[in-house]
Length: 167
Image: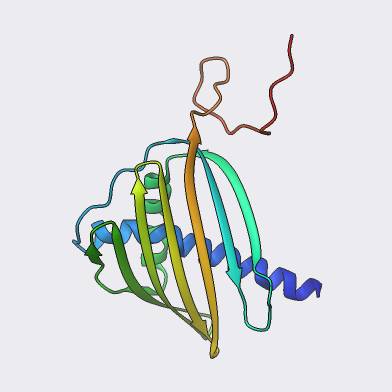
């Protein structure tokens, strides 16, 4: 069970990174530009349905970030590795693409659709196949507000969501 959870965790990180990378593909492949997402405190929620599991694996994280910059960096890293992306198809607020990545003798094929709700929210639906297994992932990203400031320096992530202690 522990090994299975570690494997799911690795796939979760990999798929999350790939799902986030989809928005940059539009620029790299010459498709219509997606909006520049607004920097700030963002929440990311990922649900993954794996073969043989009736209950999705879920993970959420909040972080102070600029999703557009993060996506560009991740995309650049994947492009250097062994991932190949199809041109992005754009219709209304939906952008779709497919990709194939090979690493350590494994091939991961994905189809994804990103739905842009605004510069403060988007959703990515991904179906991936590896070793004849199908996994489905839903990533929901939403800007929650501005980042906390630390002595006038750059924004830093908020460590918790409850109100700060009163002086």
